[in-house]
Amino acid sequence: MKARNAYWRAAGAFLRTPERALRLAVFAALWIAPVWAQPDTLRIPFWIQADVSSGGQAVSPEEIKVQLGVETGQVRQILGPDDGTLILLIADLSSGLTSAQLAKTALKENIEGLPAHTRVALLRAQDGLKVLVDPSPDRGPLLAAIESLQVSGRAGLLETIQPAVRLGDAILAKAAVRVSVLYVTDSEVSNYREDFTNPTINSSDSGDLSRRFRDGLIRDRIARLDASLAETQTPVFIVHLNYRTDPLNQAYQTGLMTLASTTGGNAWFCRSQPEIGAAIGEAFSAIASQYSLVVEAPSEPLPKSLEVSLESPGRTLAWRSRFSFNKNGRTER
Image 1: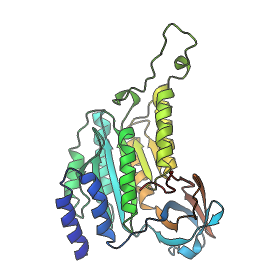
Image 2: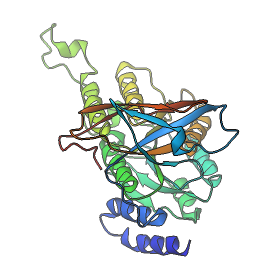
Image 3: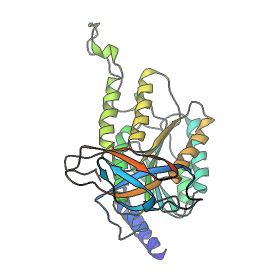
Image 4: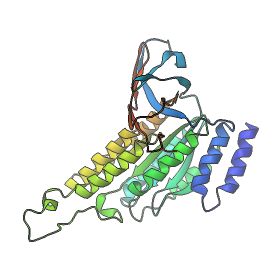
């Protein structure tokens, strides 16, 4: 514990540099396991939905069968609910003061109930990813920062999700810890700096395809992000505070669900303000109950896309089922 505290004191000083968001990966890793380094592995998030086999005993590596494409995967380690956890909590709040306040209240309640082995870093998505509060055993500054979060600016989720997940991957590569990205957002298509409204290119041409596919730009952006996130390993969870029913925002919200699913995470969309607290609670529960399976990467040459299958006798599992590999033959970290 003294070693961990020393690393966090060093991290606090170092993270005040301009590149503190990137430095977070290094020092979060040192807090959990200074000597951990397993770059040639896959981290597969999974959940035990039902268990009639063990009488409450923790699942062991020998009890998990992993299929990586045509190969049988070799399990190095399983990290579960009793192991160290780092949550990268990202606020993307730009409208709706009442919804934001309900979200802040729910966030504080859930964070106050977290076990000691779970730490939370608070980041903001507006104008690029920024670290507001470093992970610390003292949750006072974190709770105060959540309460004082500003509700302003442009939506930032689509612009920050890639660097956020890559930050999580950098930690996974160095630390024996479970890492999750949790977005709390009220974003809508029209509030991004980028114009996703897909205006008609030729107003005099009734056959212009932009008339028929007005969600084409947002679908294209989501597809490109999805392909990139398939090459990463950190699960993303999204709580959207304000479900919208217009066609463009429905395409956007469907896209957010796709992005979360691709990473092995989940998304919740609140159709009314009373649903906000429950949705945030469910997100924290999903993060807390996550297992992280550390598996040796399959043999080279690696496929462009890899299907994953898990089995454990007497257990019903849910897991991330697909990874992609970049041109260098690795998931991105």
